[in-house]
Image (cartoon, rainbow, N blue to C red; front, side, top):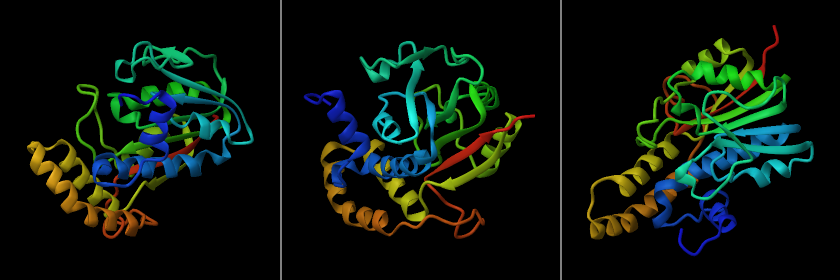
Length: 246
């Protein structure tokens, strides 16, 4: 955004996004991911690799974990959609330039949906993890096509678990980022943000829909289990797993 430095941008767009009509497109997903990152990375320790780090919005959170000694953000050589942000480590999208068993923990938020062969990249992540290392990731479920043409998948809990098992992970735990209400709110936000509406209509609908959107966000409940009924809808998923040692 014009006039904002990187620190202000990260705070406004990822860490402290205000809930108002103009933020409905991204609020639900950013809130859900932030809550998951805050919860699941508390048990990180030692060296942590952030795969597909982008703006590195969660770097401060990870570094604030008492047991974490080092954070490394990794992304492509020229991630044009992140402007002048330079990752700590650059890669080709296939091979992580690090030795085997280099990191105690690896995180990858909104990353796996971009890979046509997820088990290959998961196996590469496993390679650079120390024995017993923790992997944490989030993936979208309700989201429009993005970073075209590098948008491959929307995962169910079962497909995500299968890929992780095949790639050499164990102790896999998958949770919804949000429930029915968050999913509905996210769809409303996407429709208001990206559907072909003229500027005036969009601005009016933003104001009209905001009270309902606010209600959905404030009353959302995450399902305890994926049961195909009450627990059958979510806006995205989080997953934690451990490196399996044969």
